[in-house]
Length: 100
Image (cartoon, rainbow, N blue to C red; front, side, top):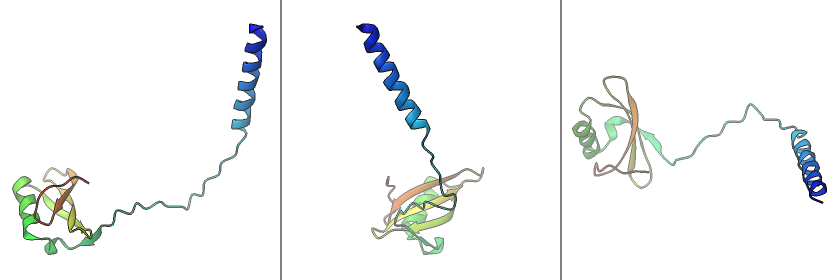
């Protein structure tokens, strides 16, 4: 009885594996996924003074390469350090660091 049960399970498992391997999946290589994070780009000169001061205080060797703002007046800052390291920081309009 155990052998019969084992044979049935084994044959069922091999049939499902065969059925799965016969599926053809085609991907359209022209599709692009764009993540929407509700930030729009702003000039670095248009940043609030508190945000610019927070960056220069916390990261004196950093330069802000790009800046973005959302409707809640939260800023996404792409910074570059002197050694070429890049990173993204988030701050509110008062220059306080936030995590998103």
